[in-house]
Image 1 (tube, rainbow, N blue to C red):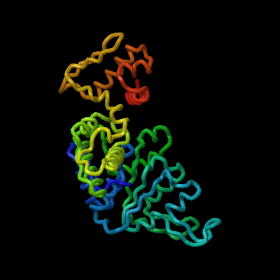
Image 2 (image 1 turned 120 degrees about the vertical axis):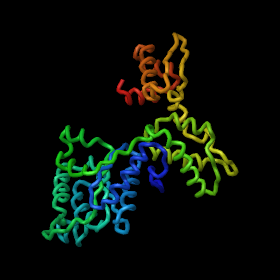
Image 3 (image 1 turned 45 degrees about the vertical axis):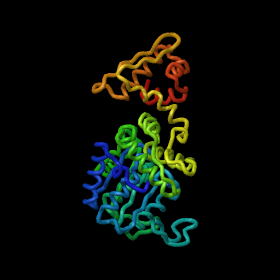
Image 4 (image 1 turned 30 degrees about the vertical axis):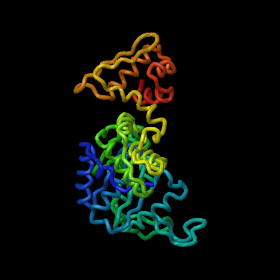
Length: 332
């Protein structure tokens, strides 16, 4: 299920304060096309709803269209509607999603996955603000605001000839980038506490987060972003025994402790002992970041292991899977 409040509304990080400011700015301009970009789980859909809810269109329909799930043979009918008899099985006139939205807001989610031909037809609709139902000749006015969202880099897709340059420019009138949770350290515990209260109230439990839990969460990289954090807190609240008042580490999925091992290394001087030597990486507060420290640890472990990933994982005390994820993350 989707979060009940905007990730920007439950945040302290400068990055999300900037997102919140941009949401308010574009909400006041109800006709402007918006492009939301961010990794899966960062809350693009919630940001789109916030734009709609804060705008003069808030009393009108909000229609979300998952471009990944659009069935290719019926994609045009889904978007634009069809007339009776337009194709086999079209027994009556049917309005499309763009028409159903009326004067509200349409979210084109994961626009980067839209089929090329349909991209061209969408571009024409956005430029002319009219479209025809499949099998129809009468123009239908597009009155809704269009918000597009993608976890994929549309500029990169353009360079790969997988996304139309003209459509990219037409959609990115007002771009908003939603940062991943790993870049919003200030928000992690705040969001976790918010979700703990939310799910606790639903289940009649009053729970708080143990300091050890907060520490683990702060050192986990959250590949699934806010969605992953929300799901794991929901699980922990469900697992918490009746009468328990604190969420403790054993209620978290095992991967949290495993994947947080590298992130826990934040002391000014780091020394990890190994039977064939020692792995030493110096961390200089104010100059280094946790991310570049993690990269250097990986590089040093791989050097010590002669490039053998299983051995490097043993040196670092993490699983091979955890190591492979980080190797891929840093392109090592």
